Amino acid sequence: MNRFLIRAIVASTTFVLGVACTSIWIATPPSVPVANKLPKKCDPVYDANVVHEAIAENDEPDWFRAFQELPLYAMPDCVDEAYSLAWIPSFHEPVLVRVWRMGDESFLTAKKLDSKGYTFGSLKESYARSLTKAEWRDITDRLVRANFWQLSETTSDPFPNDGAVWLLDGWNSRQYHWASRRVPKDQYAEICKRLIQLSGLETAHDLYLP
Image (cartoon, rainbow, N blue to C red; front, side, top):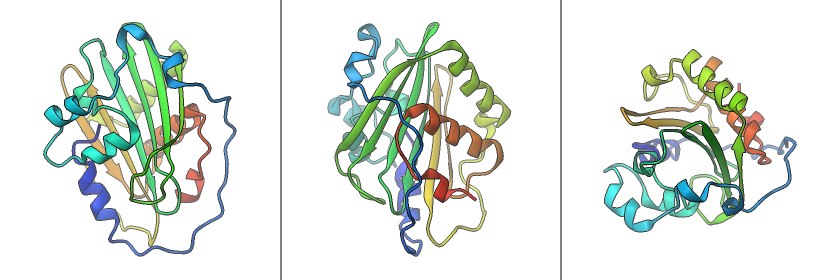
């Protein structure tokens, strides 16, 4: 998933935690077991051995264990392109939304942990479904408008007293890239909001946006 995720998380723990805010929920479709909605011929299933062998030096294996996901850079050969959002808020459950393309088919998985803040518990919710061609095109168009592959990994923007890590990463056969923000803005924020919207997960992400 995120080559330097652990750095972003460790850095985030230094911020002063404020008073927890009241959750704002978004509408969610019915949940479905992940295995029922993913292609059996190309299902990037979590494998602890693969994670152990492929994990980057600064990544945290417990993150992938908690979400039961492979790093993006360890996706199987049948995957042509993949992107993910790791949302790690101070006072709510961490969320991972992942989309990937296999030929002309594309898919989404979305997961939420039962822990809060910068600790990683166990899976609380999992959703999965195929994406329409329009949905996939909408995601990739937003990434192009944000100039994702050229985004700086971090910024020098001032941090809020409490907030969230918004970490986007992407992979294809040619490259891997990640970018992390504490205060997502403009096109970066729009990508994050769109991925959460498509996920169907109930989150309080609006509380962590400017």
